[in-house]
Length: 242
Length: 160
Image (cartoon, rainbow over all chains, first blue to last red; front, top):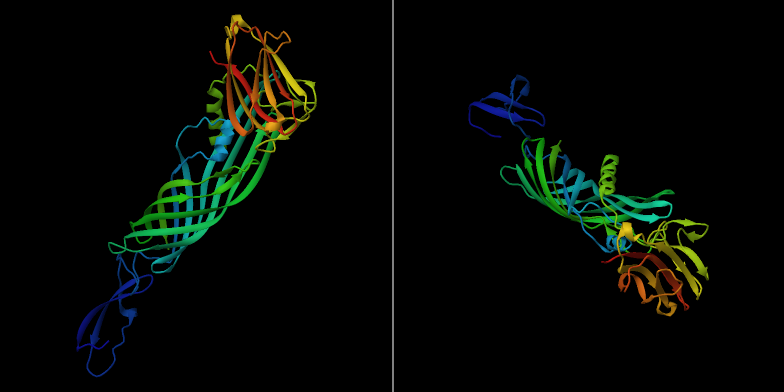
């Protein structure tokens, strides 16, 4: 940098600190900027030149929310066969964990784990030997990878985004009756478009809200009926960036 | 997760069960290759899987097969029964010619016969009314023709 003769105050930002320096520029020569003689600045929001305080390389999100319960051919068939659910609620709880590698300024690679569904149906048949109870329970999970693209607003504090992820989905099923239980693991797939927004409260900590739709046709009956463990999901949570 | 399931079944256990005149209406319980509570009168039956390998249905194998169950009705305790609702879930071809029979009073004479139409596990419902109150019901299932006939549910309940 070419400067007129004079005494300057300069702030030097590195990746992990900021320094206040005083530099005397004299005539006819180079004046090195030595940070050894500078004063480290305390409690100053800093970032290296060209980098935003709120854009970090890695992020981790943990979220909870509610997800839509829905009937489909699989569950309607269970109802026809006399298997009943005592939970009439149209929504269920949801849990998700996501890790992001913010590879490009507006594009991130996402890996996420989702608790998709806990389902249960039960049928009680009276017999001359007493009640014969049959229950079918399933717990569905998803593991997906995808891309998240977004933009930044309000000095990079707000980050709306769109995301598309896909990957394997699993259901741990358990059919039980008076004679015993038969657990099984079923593997399928899932796809999940999502839109959301991050709100950075601090360079390393933020909140997020997300709306997504999951299609996860994991369970399949012997009669060919398929159950989608997905649906609409609304989630919010905490985001930690490094 | 275990706590959640405990809660689910605690809530489920608090709910009342609807009354059924037919015992073992889902053919869930079997003993010696025969559904518990049902008598094989003629022919051949088999236990087959339905929507899940552990959910069994009753296959009426040979033409002329008949099973039945007699259920005494305690009028003093259960009240008069002048009408029953029959709910069937079955996988039946047209050629199988499957019928549900009701012998009101269990005197050995079928008072009512309902043909189960061709169906692929669709729920079917019939209403049967009696002139006199039933003191006993003999519920029968018979297959007269060739073809597939698998019964998943045969519920007979009060409709009055």
